[in-house]
Image: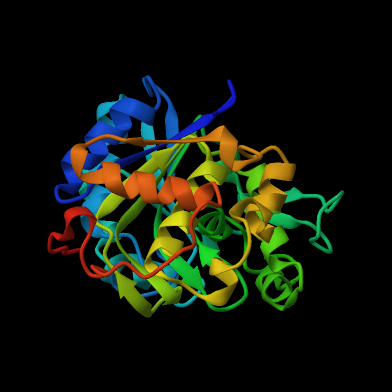
Length: 325
């Protein structure tokens, strides 16, 4: 039985991305963005096609929702970790999609000292805190879209919590301190990923699980095709649901092991109050008949009543239909 404070994760068939995003927005999106400044964080960590990075159709659908909700200004903010950000955004089609939607592109690694806000290390696993891009701190609404991926460089998963690493400075523009070197060499990496999310607001997170990587990641890996899109106002709930989906298809030992809410990223984020604290506080909502069986399987995994397994239709989604990204 879900608690009164339960967070919903909405799930819908992704055969028509635009329709799926419209439906998800009507359930979980902000009631109004009239006159508000909005920053959008997509996933463009590398110059690789979906599901390593945000699909252009997803970005177009999401920016369209933000624009039609009355946003005064829209900024697509990004910092790539495996490539030159401006080139990645051009090559992946994001810059063109943003231009057509009337959104400004903010290449965060081109920001000087005034473009960042320092978050102190008090109570955190970060040695000297970290820097968050000011647009994310100052926006009146933040929307993000992430992918469904594992992370072989110590993060274990790269979902909505991990996606926000791209809103943090790689280096301090004043003294050159390398925050990403600290992150990726730390035994506390997954806790650090969770911690930075406390300082970055998020009004809605959309996970494009049309396809994903169940092993490897973040830029390449074993492809799966659930053909669903998930959305929530709660990043912890969304990532827990994403991990259940990965387990359903069979994933890495680190992802498959133990209870989901005991995994480092999830447990630390829940501890900090970023989202729900347990699987019982998470409600999965199927928005169409195609997703109902999938939701039941994910619920059993979240509750610990079923082991993850590789679906027989690993390249097909609910109902065994052919899936394309």
